[in-house]
Picture 1 (cartoon, one colour):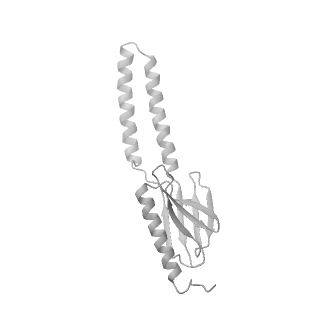
Picture 2 (tube, rainbow, N blue to C red):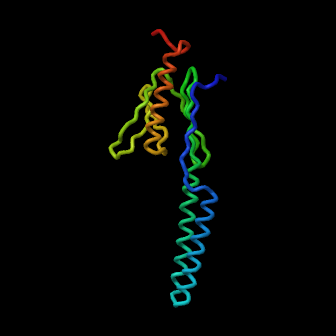
Amino acid sequence: MDAPLLDLTLRPHRSLGPRGFAVLMGLLCAVSFVAGIVFLAVGAWPVVGFLGVDVLLVWIAFRVSYARGRIRERLTLHADRFEIVRTDHWGRVRRHSLEPYWLKVELADRGAGAPLVRLRSHGRTTVVGSFLPVGERAELARVLDEALRRWRQSPSTSRIE
């Protein structure tokens, strides 16, 4: 197997790590518990159940966010192909292989202000890094474009057609 000329692994950023999540949930539980005691003392016992539901919904939202954080995209440029390996949050893997000679990198503005990095080759379009922040998408497009430019200029990949 040949060594890739470019090997990038893209993953979504999560600003709150497991320890921060535990601290946040501990604080939220403590505040809800204290508020629940106050509401019980004044006779508003039904509110206590809603405080528990609030904590549960915050916990579920974070678990879903962390599951989405397991998404991975691996982009590799080999001497004969450009390969995209996507792993979704369930762990399912999908592979796409594109011909690098005809591959075009586009930073396409979709009108909403957040451009997408599109890879086009032979009528097929693939979006990569859609979970990245806008600034990182622009950098990804630049890195991919530069790697493909170097690949096309290398003597081992030049073609006579």
